[in-house]
Structure formats: structure tokens, C-alpha cells
Image 1 (tube, rainbow, N blue to C red):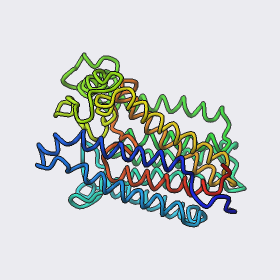
Image 2: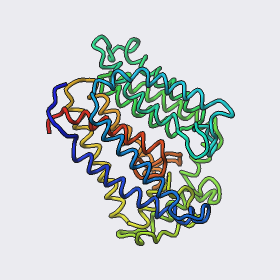
Image 3: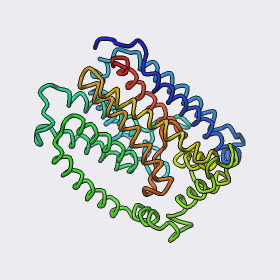
Image 4: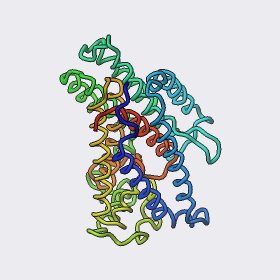
Length: 366
């Protein structure tokens, strides 16, 4: 790669920093009542979110400046390490069980979620594989199928936790990269049809997922059970109106809406800042996706182009799913909103991934 720019894409940096600022503010606002009730410290989650954000920003800028050839060198070891961690996390007594999923490794307050790291590892490895001059993605048996089997193996390990939300983001990101690499549409369409059938099978295999589908179609059928999350989320979004109730004035965060500072933080944001605040967040995500696509199109080589496309797709898919869930467009699934929701592994990993995107943006024309 020959350098064309000395600095990363400023528009992406500005959008990320704005989302992080909104995120820290909203984590405090959404969690203050719960944090004070449980820990006696209204800033308990906000302080940790600020530290996660600071660490993530440091990683983002550091990664944006390293030699881009390192990403290709680290792709295979990174994927192997993530597979090992996904296996280890399934061992009873080793993996930490939270909200019904054995998805965490760690001791005490310090823990990581291996499935989050797998997303970036899979993006870089698929990009390296597809960018090989001898690899023919248009060939079903020698190109399309090996990529799908690799994705399917990682998806299977994540589903053993189980974590359908992260698995869905992984598969969606992988399929986007397969499409960007030049796979035939008939192969992609056939897999999507097969995937829909498999998705239906996963839902039927778990009663709680069936309940979520029923609650999605008619949350009032079980308002205190499966439909509770969605009803409380809509109770938050509805009163927000155009301008919102005002920062800190949410009613639903007072132990009515579960996970107000994680999965449902967008609901509290819409309640307090209204349509204008919610629209601002959506626009910032759209800006990141726009600039990410531009980096992917303008990248000087196929590897960096596919990595940029994968990272952009990962952020976009996760944001669309989260906002769709809290607004009732999609069935409820546990997935955080990038850059805003409380969480260490998700936030720092996503910022590290953006650092890779910014790294490649230095070699594109603007």
C-alpha cells in the first residue's frame, strides 16, 4: 500500500466520538436509578462505560496507525485463538452463565465475551481467504461452500452458548463479505432460503424463542411475560414525541424497563430526547455506514476492501437489529447498540474494529 493520506477519515472519527459521548451520557441517565438502588452509586455504570470508551478510543487510534499488513498476518492466529476461546467458554465451571447464556470468560468483575472477538477475527480471515489470487468465490464447491462452512462452524459454537443475536450478526456480516467478494447470486439466494428454514428450526427447538415470536406478533397476549420487554419499550418510546421528556426525565428507567442501559438504551434515549434525539443517532450510524462503504470501494486492494465492507456491515447489522427490536420491528433478541449500550467487550471490540477501518481509510482518495 502507498500512503495517500496522513490521517484517518475525520468524518468517521467525528461520528464515532459523538456517538460515544451520547452513549456515556445515556448510560448514566438510563442506569442511575438502578445503579443507586443496587450499588448505592448512581455513577456505577457510567464510570465503567467511560473507562471502556477511553480504552476503546485508545485502541482505535493505535490500530489506525499500525502497518496494515499486520492484519493479514494476524488473521489466521486470531481466528484459531477465538475458536479455542469459544470452546473453552462452553465448559461448565469455566464459562460464566449470564441471562441463560454461557458466553463469558473471566474472574469477578473482569470478563470478556469471546463471541464478540470472533466477529472481527472472522472478518479478517474471510477477507484474507477471499483475497487470495487462486481463490474462486464464484465456484460453489471450491469457493462459496468453504466460506459458508467456516461461518457455519463459528455460528454453531456461538449457538451452543446460546447467543442467537451475536450469531445472526456474524452470519449477516459473513454473507455481506461473500457477496462483496463476487459470489453468484443464485448461490447466495439458495443459502438464504436454506437459512430461513434453519432459522425457523432454531426457533421451534427452543420454547423461549417461540414465546418471543408470539410476543413480537402480539405482546399484549402475555403482557407480564414474553411481551413485557416490548410493551415497556414502546411505553418509553411513545411519550418521547418530537422533543422528548428531557434528559434524565425517563419514567421507564425506574425499574420498569429491563436492561435500560444495555439492550434497550435506545428506548430511553427516544423517551428523553424524543424523535430528534433518536433521529440524530440514526443519522450518525448512517454516516458511518456511508463512509465505511466509501472506504471499501476506494481501497487499493481486495483484502482491505473486504475487511472494510465486513466491519461496516457488522456495525450496520447490529444497529439495525437493536433499533428494530426496541421499536417492535423485530422479535426481541439480546443484542447491544454499538457505541451506546453499556458493555466492555462489545464496546472495546467494536472500537478496535473501527480502528482497522480507519487504518485502511488512510490509503483511500477522499
